Amino acid sequence: MPPVVLSGDLVASRAYGAGKAARVLSEVVNEVNARFSKTLLVPLDVIQGDAFQGVAAAGPDALSLVFRLQGGLVVRSAGRLKSRFGLGLGAIDQALAGVADPSLLTGPAFVAAAEALARARKEKRQIVLQSGRAALDAAAGGTFGLIEFAWKRWSAEVWRRALRYDELGSIKKLAGELGVSYQAVHKQLHARGVLNVREALEGLGRLLEEVG
View 1 (cartoon, rainbow, N blue to C red):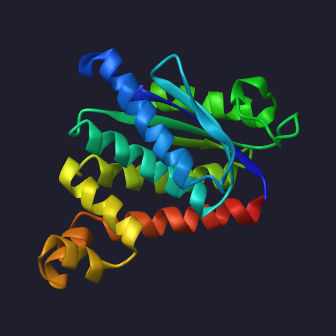
View 2 (view 1 turned 180 degrees about the vertical axis):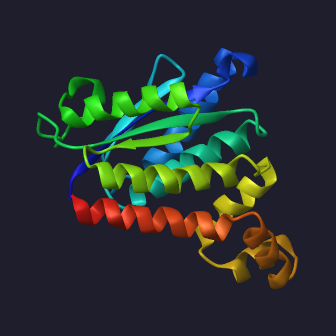
């Protein structure tokens, strides 16, 4: 299974307040590192307060990590913060065992992630993959474009329910927690595209896993 380098930075952190944004990012990164400790080959590290980088095994969990990080930022900032992601698929020059600081690493995957993040900034995208495979990058671009279309229409409350559904894995359990009907929760998740986004991320993650 190939590694994928995840590089990212905050959007609109100055308007939110640089210090406050840095604290929110640090909290969310810590939560993601704990939740995805088996997926992360090198834990995410916060850089200069408003950026982050890490290395994950390519697959569905790597994209679930992106989902959790984006959602955590939105929920904790009441919808005022989000992030851009540059994903680079490829080789890494060094052995990863025991490495805790991604800034010590080099290789084509890091170059690809940096170029993908630069494209995300230029094109005002939220997620860009650069893998060196034209067909895969095109498929990822289209999939991420549709996902971003849905995300831009999610309020902090929709994100909160999407994240909790991701944790529980059951609409019935989520409905029970919220004290509403199964039908009401399913209708909202379906109408906002939450179920489709999860399916798209899972499918693209499987593709990343296979092509590596």
